[in-house]
Image (cartoon, rainbow, N blue to C red):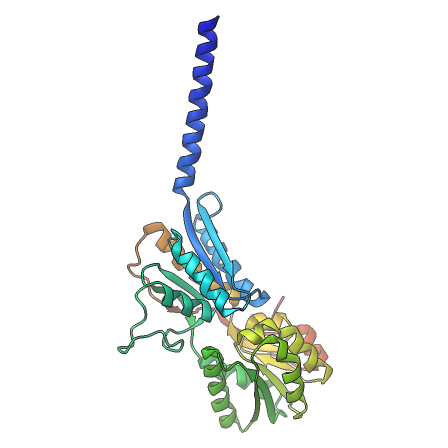
Length: 321
């Protein structure tokens, strides 16, 4: 009897040891990655969703992936600390969303691959060296500024009577300042007067937009700017009250109340970056990878806002859902 009990105990101990060992092996085979977000925002969240769906479609999910996610809540000191933490961890890569996250990551590490999304071309983000080379660890998907031209042209096409456009910009954001220069140039070509006012935080948005509306603008243009992203609903509410339509270059902002846009599909932007990241995770090699331009751009419009402002859009525009 004692012998049977002893054998049973040995069997249970062996089984427990095997299960523990199997669990440890599963944990050890998990890949750890970091995701650095600048702020909580519905538009940027679409890119994040696309990124992780691309990973899942390529075989990377909860079973074999550990994700260290950090959101800086639009605070730059917090962004720096969050990035420092990711760099200190054994992450295989860092995904960045949007521009300031990308800039911070490549400043903090030269070894860990960085896969960007919702970011401009490296030279526009001032990330290239004296020879025009991008950081060797920077990958993912970027946008150029050419699409701004088409986005401004939409206003003249859809609202031919428009003579004065208003916009706000954040002086501390390179992509905002570059986009502002672009819209200034395009407005000059089209003979449109541009009213512009600086804004430093979303707390100031309502007041600044109100000041623009007092200048009797015919339309408002929402630039690719993190302050705009974080306070889009405030902008739309103020403009709607003054019966001033909002146009933009960001598809995600059309879902949030802008009338129309020509620009990148945020979900597809993140997905495209996720495909690149998946390739790296499969091979652990960056051979053949480099920053690439976003592939999915389109003209979109908000059906509800189109009815509100009695604006017509031809078949080249796709209604957003």
